[in-house]
Image (tube, rainbow, N blue to C red; front, top):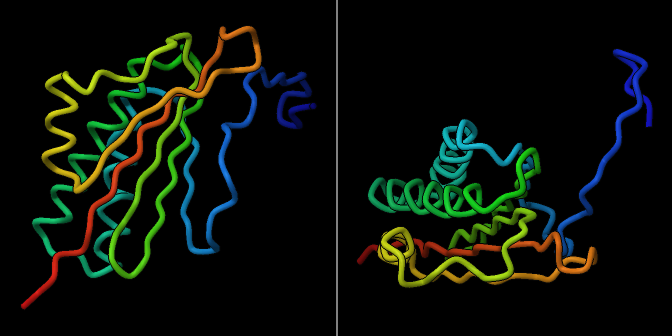
Length: 153
C-alpha cells in the first residue's frame, strides 16, 4: 500500500484482532498501544457513559476501570502495535473490551493490585489470551469489563 503523502510503501505486520461484528451503535477505537493515549480513552469512556445517562459516581468508576484495563494491556503490548478498544452500550450496562498483540502467552494476573482495582470499579471483568497464528509469537490479549447503570429507586 502506498502512502500518498510521502509516496513511501507502508507495511502492516499485525493482523486484525479476533472479534465479531458489533451492533450498529458500538464504538471502536484503534490507537497506538502507548500510555500517552490513556487520556483519550478515558474521555471517550466518560462521554459514552454521560450520553447513556450514567450517574457521576458510575462515570468516575468507569473512567478509572477503563484506564486500568488499558494500562494492563499496554504494558503487555508488542512495541509499536495497536490497541483496539470497543464500547458497547445497551439499556442496562456499558461494556468495554480492549485487545493488544503480545508475546505473552498468559492472561493478566487476577491476583495483581491493578486487577483488584479493576474488579472493585467494574461490575464484571475478565481477561483471556487468544493464540496468534505466527507460531504463538503474537497472541491477542483481551480484557473485558462491564459497568451496569445504577437503578434509581
